[in-house]
Image (tube, rainbow, N blue to C red):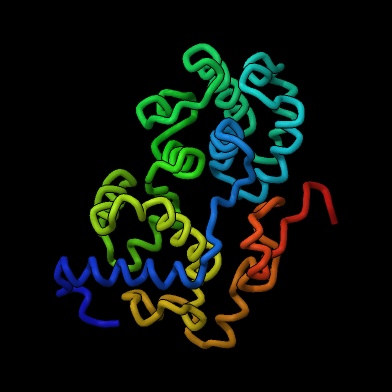
Length: 262
């Protein structure tokens, strides 16, 4: 598309919201791609997801939560035993320190419960704004933008903002949408970044929102070649979660295999 450089703020808001509406139709089943059953599991899984895939976290956390189901259990865990479980996620020593530390903080400061306020969450070891918003949006239903690497890449490709710092991206993109849209917007954008608008070779020729995208042509534009680049359910492959939502399965998504399976 052309004319984005001279785009007015009103036109930008309209285009951004149209992209989100179209993404909602493409991914009506968009969801957090970390397996969790409660806020504690989600905050731990999100901390573990740094510098690895959600799939690898999902394959690792079943053993962790089977052995340490509560903050009280993990707070008094033997670090070496936890490190051994977390080894597949990479940076396992630092992550062990964070998850044991945040468990101790939950027990000491919050009665063993994950707090539902941003200012409390960010005090926990290993928890920054991004992790806090994942937890607030998905465990407590409180709106937040998850500015991960996919989100940053796509909103810049779409010229929603020129900002490069996560907090500035969060502010700029948040201003384009009603607060009530923020959590699902994050899921839509991240799903699209993982499935179609990849970092190295976006599948432009298979992208349903190509007419709205200023970066169209950065990736493969041939429809047949682009189709081969599609990931997860769009390419007919398993997703990131071992226990995905039913809507995802109904749409043709497959559960991820557990750790160590062929």
